[in-house]
Amino acid sequence: DIRDTWDSMTNIGFSQDQLARWAAPGHWNDPDMLEVGNGGMNDDEYRTHMSLWSILAAPLLAGNDLRNMTPAILEILTNREVIAVNQDKAGKQGRRIAKSGDQEVWAKALFDGGQAIGLFNRGGAPAKITVKWTDLGMKSAPASARDLWAHGDLKLDGAEYSVTVPAHGVVMLKIAASSGIAATGIRGPTLRAAFN
Image (tube, rainbow, N blue to C red):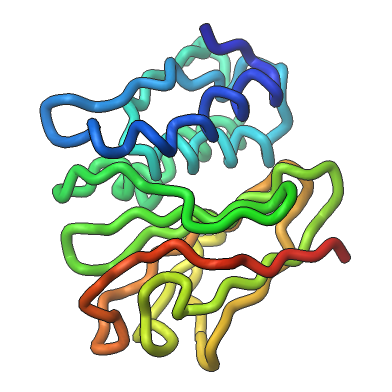
C-alpha cells in the first residue's frame, strides 16, 4: 500500500512502466490512491505525484481530507490541464522513454496526435534536463507546447528543450501534433541530464 512519503510514492509510481501493455479503456493499472495533501510531502513532490499518476492514466482517487485543503493542494488536485492528460480519450498509459541517474522523461500519446511529457527530477537538488525532439519520435520542434503547471504556452525551436527542474519536482508539457511528428511515434532514446 502507498504511504504519504516520497520513497513510497516514487517506488510505486515509477515502477509502473512495464505494466503499460495491460492498460487500456476498461482496465487501468492502479498504483494506489493519491496521497496529495496528507502532509508527508511538499508541494513539488505532490505535483510530481499528480503528474505521474496522470501520465500513467491511473485512477485519480483523492486520499486526503477534502474538507481541509490548502489553496496549493486544491490547485494541484483540480488542475484541469493535468487531469485532461489523465482522462485523454486514447486511454494510453505513458511510458518512460529516457532515464539518466535521478532524471527521467515519460511520454504519453494523446488522442489528438500530441503528447504529454513529464520531465521528472527524482534527485535531491535542482537539475537541468535536456531532451531532444528526436527522442520523442519527432523530426523537429513541436508546433506548440504548453507548461501544464505554469499554465503558459512555450515558444520552442531548435532540436531540443532544456529546463531546470526542482528537487523532487516535475515539468509537465503538452506538445501539439504537427508535421514534425514521425510516423513511428515515441521511441526509446538517450537523455542528457545534468545538475546545476
